Length: 537
Image 1 (cartoon, helix red, strand yellow):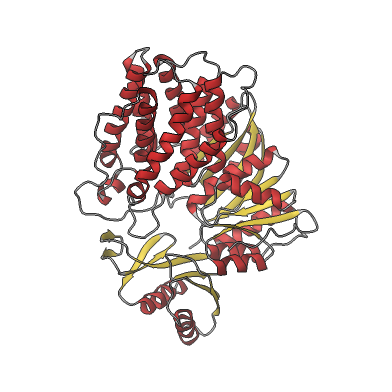
Image 2 (cartoon, rainbow, N blue to C red):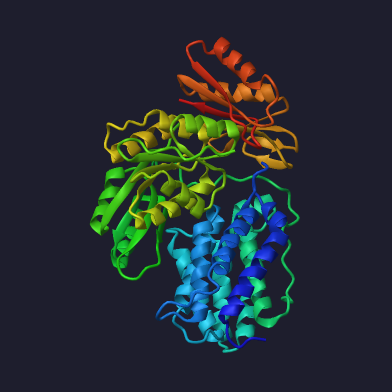
């Protein structure tokens, strides 16, 4: 049993945590409130911690920097690796937790119980600081409960404090369905919180040599599973504003207050440096000018992107003559070929921060636009953009949520425009492209369109289930009709890897017959899970 958390214990924790996450990966992936086969929190946490483990393994012979203790050096390596390998929102939040813990521990001579509690409190603060309006019943609630229990233990005994933190985290995880209605309706606990409990249990084992005694809470409570609305902020706000900001911490505090008055979905993440730092700012507003002006008052905003919310990998592509390039995330060989034909560098689906950063650097361009094509990849893209800034590369993220939006954005690129103006034009084109996804339900659920059963055909528009059917072609044509009923001049159809022969042709013929003035483009996308992706402009 250890008295202090030394560098060797940090390495055992990382290795043991990774092994434990791999064992529970499938279970955590299944904690999904949506009846579609794409729950991947467990996978994202495994990939994030794999990168942390690789960072530790590559640095075995490196001595700590001046002012850094061996255990602090190891924790910082772990946190840095997690940041560069972060996948999805859960991975990004985990990297912030590790960064806060490492920053508190780096100069402490010995990490005993009380110091561990302080570090866990700082880890919680770092995680919460990234979100303007934290949602309880999530990974944040679990780490907060662990920190409170560690502080209340008031002990120098590292093992006792670590056990108290792990027990409290487990209890907090069991309460998440009571705090977040989406979890209660789905009959699940929070997936990110479950992953954090696995890591805290691994920490207890690294310190004590024994597995935690408390039982893990049931992953799925006995309630009828249903789906829930995606947490994308209020529909009251019409624009998404995102920018990087060089500013002092005090100015950022005032900026958070001002932006919170202007809108919602506010997230501000820093690089963890002391003094003036670089911050990634994201908010939904109606007054774009006021949001940007608030950034100007706080410091130096740049890589500003504005989006209007509307009703095998090819080799890197050389940068345009003026030093610009585009990096696009794509899942599916056909989609990747489409983006490559548009002159973009393509990164395969669900990339890490490091993989996106490598793609940005490989373009050789000084100005790069990144199109993530998935809500879960947006946080990773933002982290890669922030890392690229330190390398002297100006990166703007256009927060596309579907490949059809990225195609619309790439179609309006114009090297003759200023880069910032070009990014705004791309963001507007992407926002004006409404998108839909058609898939098969993976389980029984109650959606906003009614109940569904495994195998039913689901048509999701802008992320919400709008139609439930039994026939794939009929459901596809029906969702296209519904989208065109709101207006549109062009339809883009991307056939998935599992699409039956003739699907896009049948939909195209239907549109030609019923909507004679609408232009239709069909492509083989090759994307998994979704037999058809639809874009309407």
